[in-house]
Image 1 (cartoon, rainbow, N blue to C red):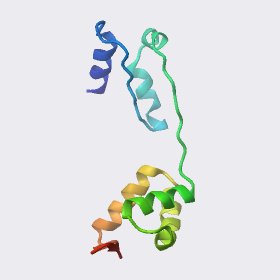
Image 2 (tube, rainbow, N blue to C red):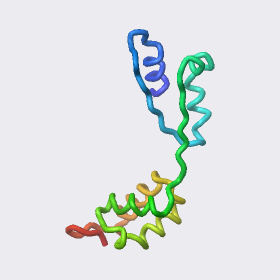
Image 3 (cartoon, helix red, strand yellow):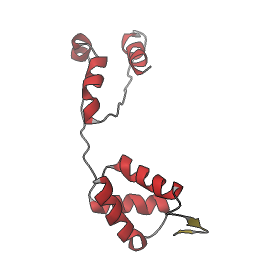
Image 4 (cartoon, rainbow, N blue to C red):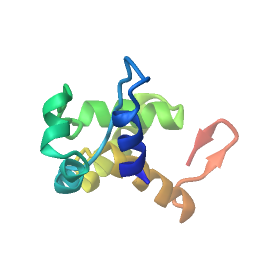
Length: 113
């Protein structure tokens, strides 16, 4: 699917000024680079932007935003989630979803318990 879509954009001579954005994990790097031949890569202006894990403050802000709660109210939860996820934003969301599904985190009117 992805390879065919990229090839379509790359070989459509009528298409101009298109920017494709890809997101992938480092362990998927071989697959991503295999999508483009050496010749294709040399014609493109490829830019890699590496994103690292979030620090505790950023994880806290993220959780505060997701749960719509004050930073003070979720501080302990943020420390736990940051330790478990090592600040990986994807895993932060997955962790929140997991504890919600297991009913360890429940919505009560305008707050979470």
